[in-house]
Length: 587
Ligand code: SAT
Ligand code: MN
Image (tube, rainbow, N blue to C red; front, side, top):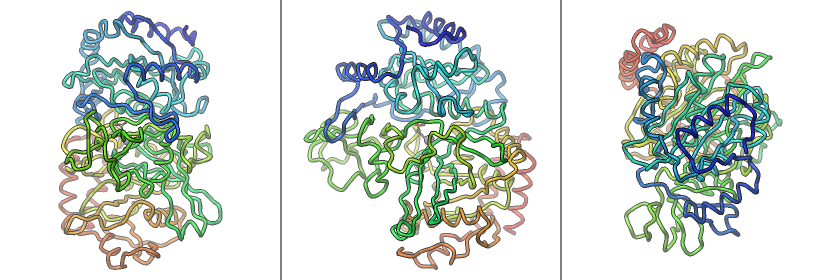
């Protein structure tokens, strides 16, 4: 039975049912009884495997099709009316043409299948930040994951009422044809369609499709921001908590930073990090003129490989119950999961992510490099008490960062908001396994939004500049790079918990509590102002990590100019002025 009387929603769902022709329709009410029945059914149908109920209660393993393991950026479309509004970084197709294609592909797509209707909320239900949507899917795996990643069910329909401003989403698994994938967004209709995939980032529509691509459009129109950012709170020994948000590309350590455990000395002194979110932030100007953030999600869709009790105990603990693992290895002797980097003792006998027998002497990976866990946020030991705060948390610093072997120093601060927007716009990072395609190639990824900005990137930069004018108390903007390597290709900075040392400097700067050095690219710490106590790193090494190689940066400036040229005369003049300033400083 329908969970809403919302006429617009019912009319659209009827229309989709007429197109896809399901055998039956099931509304997901969010009740444990219904979810449990679906879990049982999914186990019976071989979609998921129940793991050891003592060691991993409520946990399941799923394997995707081998050609369906990451987001497919070249199959992702923004279908606004005019091609120029999608801009040079998005794939575009005329809406009418795309709708025609979808109608053809989805005609009878649910024949012999069930249509699940998932009402879901991004953001705490009833919060001024919250937005509601319906995802229609023929995948129980999607239902079970959406239940972890978003708030679902009757309460969402109740909060939506008759409002027509909901997001419409259709997902059809079809044959999972590797060449026939379509991840499509119609910003003017608040509509999302995912075809021929069952992989998280493509089909858990609340995440990248809604909370970033569609929401970036909504934010632009309504005067707020949808960003690919973690949110964390740093509690100092006085007990004050200060919040920052940070944008890094996929698989560059957002989850690790968001759940950071400070070095021992810091813990003893009373420092603590609280996680509000690990991937997406929605930001609005509050009545007090500060910028406030909520995490619109309800769970973590984290990269499994490399997650260990050493690297990120909070993440690993989060996955110990009520979690769905995707494309990790199955330890057959214990009926638990394993992945590269979990520990140094791989199982003697496992089933790899493709479903084949695996032993440690084989030279294939047991888990896919982009294998994931879907874990409820509530499981996280350091989840912020403000996680459900409908008003969000006040942001004092915004941090950009990427994976750069050279060029970008450990940390620097922008001189002001506009310079900070420039710093975000020139972000570059080496590609990872989170998207299909080559790994390790440096590409520009402005604000880590390259695959997620739902309109013209240069208009998005303009939106950032415009937002700056609306925020009376602007957060300070920084850039970090944990990934500088030495001549042998080893990381110089230890990263993980020790990133706390840099965060503490950032927060002191954000509150004007410490001086800095004015360099060609922005403000940088004095080498003595980054605490190295208990670390095996000399001041000279730190100095080199902070170093700005002017030759490399002149090359960088040239690359930025070429990159900006792609956007033609849409590049905001403020950013061109910042580039001129940078070039001047490098003379
Ligand atoms: O694949 S997801 O988009 O869900 C995760 C990521 O790539 O950031
Ligand atoms: Mn992400």
